[in-house]
Length: 282
Image (cartoon, rainbow, N blue to C red; front, side, top):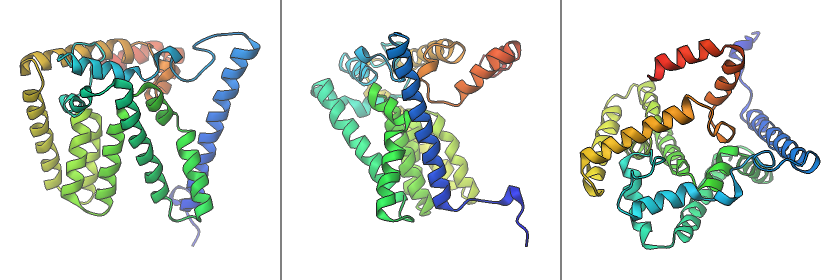
């Protein structure tokens, strides 16, 4: 039987090496581009690196921890995580910020490496080691999180744990991990659709019930009143939307495909871009 092109699916190993090749190509292209900008054109930051300002290493984490330490988690305009995040960080205010960073992000990095390694059991060990290296060392989102100390790394880890439990049909455990991811940042909520793909409605209800409980408890634990924290969070999200979604601030460091859409439409369909974006967000 002749296979339809649109139904054709590459074997797992071929898909893996295709992804690795794309990632490595992009990584090497970025290194070459910034090396050329720096050493041949004499351009400084931000043209000499695809990472953030070297003087600002780890500041996403250390600034957030400082805000928690002062008792005003939403005092910074850049505090846009949901309340559970700041509760989880509270124990680490007892330690030096840089020490806490190295401890937490070392654990996070080890988790990612092991997660990749364990997910590649379908290829020989030597190839597994190479693929794991490529998937981690050339991954811009991972490098970005480590460079900035960005807490999205832990949103991703909770999402990974959700997927792992979901694949094993451990619905209660998967709902728990998904709720943690959502309670840090809302967008993993889209993964609730995966329960529906298996015809499971109760885990969806459980997930969002847990999110409500985790959020309310976190708001009760955090300093300031619930209303004050929610108002500050809403204000910070509005600031972030205006400056990082509607405008181009930080676009060269973003890890979302949405920024590819922004770049394309701004140059070719600027009026269409703002019309659609405004209708969606405002």
